Image (cartoon, rainbow, N blue to C red; front, side):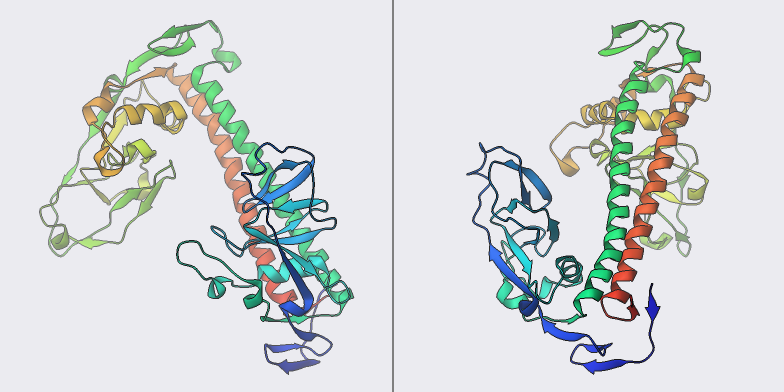
Length: 404
């Protein structure tokens, strides 16, 4: 049971804490040991014991360094300061360290959550390869409840961790299934029963698709939309951008017509396929909606409207979000990386894509959108759980909310 107490606190060097808590240095409640294991030396070593790296579980090896559970901390390189709660009979790479609790006074699980609250940035040394030393951060003062209360606090936070990890696994599985289903439905290898009159697959124009699907160039199913805008000096205009990796549209700060000068800009039209020609090869694609009415873009963001009887906008977007679609955008974007790899709009319209009937296109898009909706729901759930855990940690680890 959680209780919020208003008295029975004491003033300390780290602020108000419950009167039966202590102030300790990290070095008094935890011990550190460095690792000397190298991934290169273990490249041919395989087994049943976990080896952890800076991102978590790395591989299995045939020996272990630590018999009991411990906390690992990244002490060198990217992710410095990141901590993991590690399983017994396991090891960590040399870029990490082992952290153990002083058993007489400290619960390992509690210590793990305590370490998560520490800002290690001020202890980082080294400009090329960042590094932190236990000798430096071990001097940090932290609040320490009695052992039974530590265990209760840790158990509450572990419940949130379990929920977070379960949600992450569901999210990961959903994304894997969606990827597989996207490949299946966009190639016609997986079809809805009402559209499966002719399931025979044949090869045409480098596609293996059903007999009743067509291959069409984009020029035959898209119409470019251009709505030129002449900026007025004192009017504010909101511009949009497109994130790479098919992450959608974002809005930029409003600018005056005067600041646009003689720049060629165009009004957004809803329900169009839009891309950034400079980063199309990096999946900078999206669709416009009524939310973008009144906004503008430069000539680097061409818009295309599907012909209603031939192509569904959502189907088109899902196709170009796929690996095959990204590869085609790369083919239409010759040159080196970055700003020299610009999409040729004529080449883009020459691209050929597989096109089922308009009804099947809509069914495919609706099917894939259900995955996107589920993924969005679980992503929101994950963010909520993480926010709740952060709030709980702030309350429980400072004694503002008690478990007694």
